[in-house]
Amino acid sequence: MKRAFYLGVSALIALVIAGCAPTGPYKSGEYSLKGCTSNGSELKGERVDKIVVKKSAHKMYLYSNGKMVKSCRVSLGKNALKGPKIKEGDFRTPTGTYKIINKRCHPVKYKALYLNYPNAQDRARARSMGVSPGGLITIHGQPYWNKDGRGDSYTLSHDWTNGCIAVTNSDLDYIWAHVANGTTIVLED
Image 1 (tube, one colour):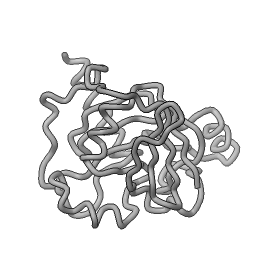
Image 2: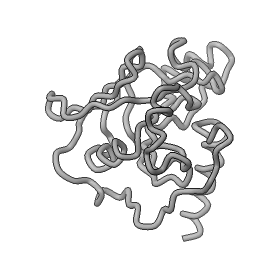
Image 3: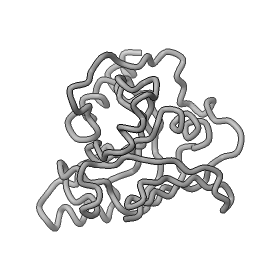
Image 4: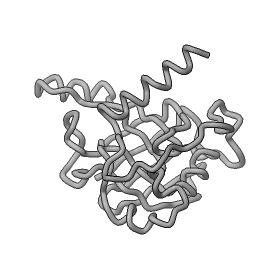
């Protein structure tokens, strides 16, 4: 139990330092982690086997067996349209092919699916430039002030994350129930 607590605290601190930390003047509470499972028992129905994010269109497409089953609007890193993520702190969303490696309930951003960014190519590029590639890129939900979704039109009309992909909480509920660890995600400019 203590180990799980410390891992959770470490993940939250890491998100604040390098990933998608809360931004703006809003911090009116935290999501409850009670009853939120990410051990595989949350998966329901048809599995999504590929996710494609088209950054310039601000759209995410979910596929099962080659057929698109859902699309949703996304918000990206504040500088996402200035090219691929190069280094920590550039507020860009990566471009490339990744995998979902972990799913966690998240007290600040509802739920989060972690990508295996940086991959070997990202690390090599950053090393050649003498910079840190950053990390902790996720697909996550909305800040707590928008937990009821009434601010979705605002949050989806701005790129506001530190490099992550943000979706509405209702879209994230669908993703959470249909995407397993190991799922491929392709991020395109």
